Length: 292
Image (cartoon, rainbow, N blue to C red):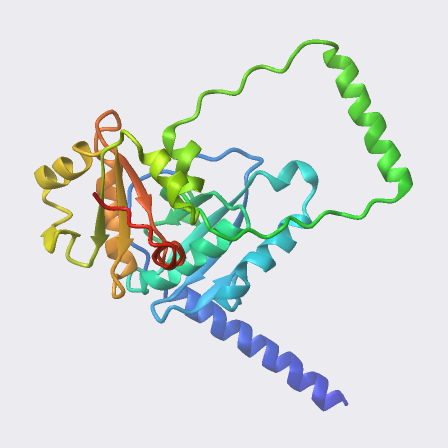
């Protein structure tokens, strides 16, 4: 029995060492952007090495289990932290973008809307280096788990909510700030309702391109990332650019495209709306084509 325990301890330590060694080899893309966060922001970290192995906070994980695992971890947090959780993505620049696409879809199905693509180094010195990016949607969503409360806890919460409502009296809540077309309509694009999508796009100019390792492909022609004039022409001439991804796309090239897009003039550029492999399949089955 003693030998068995010693063996399990040694195996656990060895396994942990191997995982850390894999994570330490991750070669992140370069980037100068700073991440702006506050002291109440919590992060979960996902790592992807150059062999597309995936780790959640340095534990190996099946990519299709990410949504449920993160939903449970968030469920265990105090209420005031749950909506402040963000995701750090430490992805090797040679990793397949396809695996990142699956991760993002898993995150979207668990309501994680803000991503931080980490750059430069996984060391603490670069903890605030990365690119902030809005995650795409998912067609499927997990039901958020709810805590089972005792009757005493329910009564305590009721009294607390009543005291807050009395404090506001009859003052109506302030109106919600105006939202952009992107945030109002992205969930419609990620549906299988052809009529609703056509309605949302009515009166808007848009085109659909494929992001490849060589650049943006439109009508079988490649627009290279560094060709600023043509990239500007692509995004300045459309209200929306729908972006699909080639099967062999490498993550480093995806991030280059993101960086070049973020450098464009915000007042002139159209929305960069990613079409995940999940929604592409659903649109295909529903005879939806986002091209004009």
